Image (cartoon, rainbow, N blue to C red):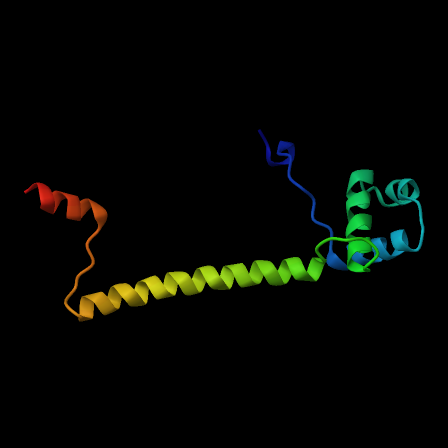
Length: 110
């Protein structure tokens, strides 16, 4: 299978998407824009829905909130991993070497 045969999503630029969303909010029909821009109707309906949410005209999560939430989750994950390392290092310096669950079960058998 060649690279071209793989079904991969196409990424549109943020500026293009913003311009098209503005046109959709201004009332241009999805069908007309789909034909003019060679963008699927389904994609344009998604963009229109998100544009309405971002404009406060429909309930839902705004685009910028999703970005902030994703960044916060990444930060939390990084901090939790760092905390685990600090705890392990602290245990080593205090003479309490951390024991993995597999090692502790072996020590009970012997």
